[in-house]
Image (cartoon, rainbow, N blue to C red):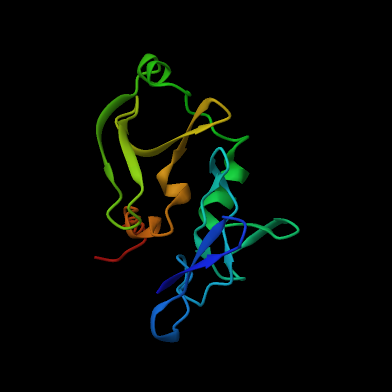
Length: 161
């Protein structure tokens, strides 16, 4: 339910609350949210993902990041992928398809790596530069998509037949 609040000088705000007195939930753990993500996604616009105090990473007074953007901040200096489509293709990468993640609904591109693996990548423009991040690093449901590691094979050495 939303209501309009007039400031009297011609300005106004729209204030929304959740239905039937229930608090909105954290997008990452479903606990009641207490904060919004302050990661800048466009000039003057922030992510505003609902986050609880335990999922939020504080980056300053009254400034918090959701787990997805906190992880991106840590990765900024570590990303080794080429920045542009042309650089990816020159390095032997081939784009296979683009779609929304089935669990978190973020747009991802699937690129075939030079060694034949399929890499899900998110694309973002930060400071005028293309930033590609592995979706496995940012998706809160990534473990659901990872291939299971096969159990180690038992050696027949030392076994009695």
